[in-house]
Length: 423
Ligand code: ATP
Ligand code: MG
Image (tube, helix red, strand yellow):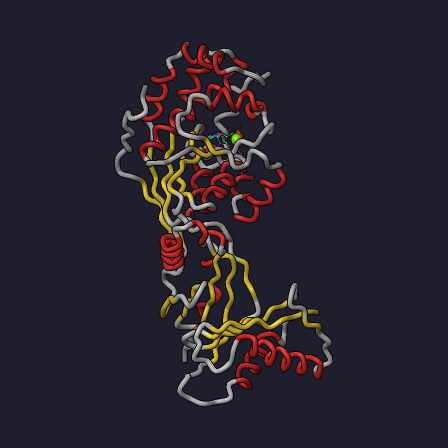
């Protein structure tokens, strides 16, 4: 027979202060529902400041947890044991609560512990404080009797056993599973990320997604038709990896080599990389407007390469009308790679791929180019017509997360990117 499972989902209290509590909670609930697609969920309720997910079958608990760990806004998750009660029955419920609490903690390792109880249903005969004292005392005695000598620590216990009296069952849990934190997906609006295939931009996208932005991606590719020869394959796999966090994603692919060749033919060698970047920004901005994005995201990190001096970031970025977010600006490479490993992009980005920026790379790139110098250089090849040429070659791929896997589909027609931002 199937036994139901109860998963308690805690969210950060912080974002409730934003004022739009209802909207955030609704988005969190939707994100959880989407994440749990294919798993039999009996109901999702909200007994107080947390969600309670009831699964029809405990066998699917682990899978559900794994899926929920990719839902932003969740601070931690617990699998609860359940004790049924009714306010109509007069019963000494304490022995049953104690036995269940004991089952929950007996195999855990800890030196200090505390019992925390919360009574959301005031019909329950005992107060939270009473439960804490009584069950805490009983657990303490039992541990002593087993030859373990725990200490009670109410401030920083190694283990907290929670007893929550809901309007349904009493839930008991002690083992916390960390969630990803952040704000529920798509609560902040949209952004467009320039995704290269390296470590940085995928991590940059993740960081902004974690704050509730829905990300679209633009990748500028070069190279041959085979995986390994073309960075497009790496970008695709990165988007695939990131999609579950926000359930859908668009990836725009722009062939870049023909445009680079024109820059190489006409502009000062030392400025090349900066001019590629400017052109990427111009094209990405047009796509961002199509996507109704409120800004661009790059993986720039201060001082990491020649194009990322403060001076160059300023002169390259000066042509953008949308704000540019650089969430890694103050991060070290090791920190970035650590996060990449955590979110599963490290391996993908470590693969060798054809990096369009590496070809025709200047031997001594300019470290301190001014906006005026770049404007002048761009005047020699008509930057605007390169933007149009790039946009004519763009293709769009759509990603959708369903029942635990990501499907990719190609848009049948080339997306038309209108001329909103031309000028
Ligand atoms: P990354 O590891 O993300 O490639 P990086 O340290 O190698 O970054 P650059 O290659 O100078 O730095 O690129 C800086 C930023 O420009 C990238 O983080 C990314 O946002 C953008 N970018 C670079 N190349 C591409 C590309 N081929 N397609 C899309 N965006 C790109
Ligand atoms: Mg790069």
